[in-house]
Image 1: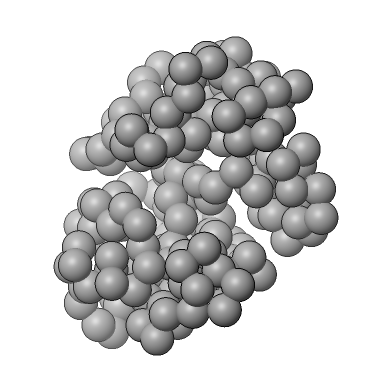
Image 2: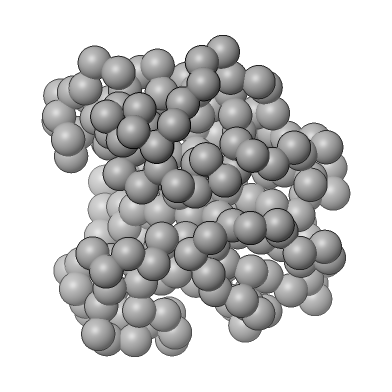
Amino acid sequence: MNANLLVMPAGPALVKQLAPQDLEGAKLLAKLRELIDALPSATPIDLVGSRASRWITKREGSFGAWGAPEVNVGKGHHLPELIQRYALGKRAEQVEQVRGQLGQPRPGVLTLVAIDGSAGLTPRAPLALLDQAPEVDHWCRQLLAGQLPEIAHNAASLSDAGIIEPELWLELASLQPQRAELINADISLGVGRYVARWEI
């Protein structure tokens, strides 16, 4: 597959220093880096993720606000971007755009989307267990796998099911990928975390 859009988790547990016991997160990160490393070396990269004020840090590139001041990725003031740059490693030098909305992915560019599913998938989840969360997790998986979800959702229903920022999910749902593959999914921390690749 000639993937030009990758979906990755947006939460800080992907950073080893912040969650050293998160073995599933380590697997997600390893698979994501494998997909990134398979791209041609000069591929330009666009980062898409929340730019909400709740995720801002004043210390550029630093995870200090989340408990790991020793980890610095050089650029970025929003947590999703910091996570993306952490995952990219040296490939972060190829980032051309950083934005909060998906829009229409640019041809010839890898669009890396940081997004999480419901935060209410287990009793110990950030939002505790929400009744609607399992169905929305299934919806997210169907969407990322390129299948037409059985149930339609809007921002309100996604939010009620524990998706903190549903707008990017709705943007993804509006796209029609030529090919789509859900590579990995995990709910061990009570949050839907996914790695997927699309060809737009």
